[in-house]
Image (cartoon, rainbow, N blue to C red; front, side, top):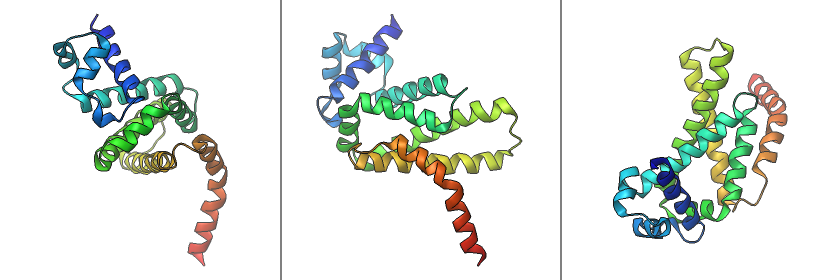
Length: 186
């Protein structure tokens, strides 16, 4: 029963976030929508920010677990993009209605979580041979790259195909790397 209530609270928040700015959603709105008591809400979540964090982490974990074994990081990005597009109004309301520093803090934590979890599934399964220091460098780089892509996509109102651009960049990466390395050597 507890998992059912927790899921109902999460679903209610996503539904409400599609209808109005996140900073206008109250615990009262959520419990009325769910038909539960305030105590039930607080049994599961400390506050609305902890609810938002739980929603994002749970969705990210599910996306990774469904895609990490036989997929690329681009496939995980596509799954995340599809989730955002399925909840476009809620995603844009969250982006536009919370303070930028709070949003960016949550987004960077999500990006780190997604990249770390995906990398662990991939690197640990194949005995990658990377030192912990090298793994940390890669995780920081890819987390920042993912963060930047999502911020740009949101700031453009989700108006372009982020997955298509990511895939194209992966094709261009060897050429651009060669260009930058050759410039450096001259």
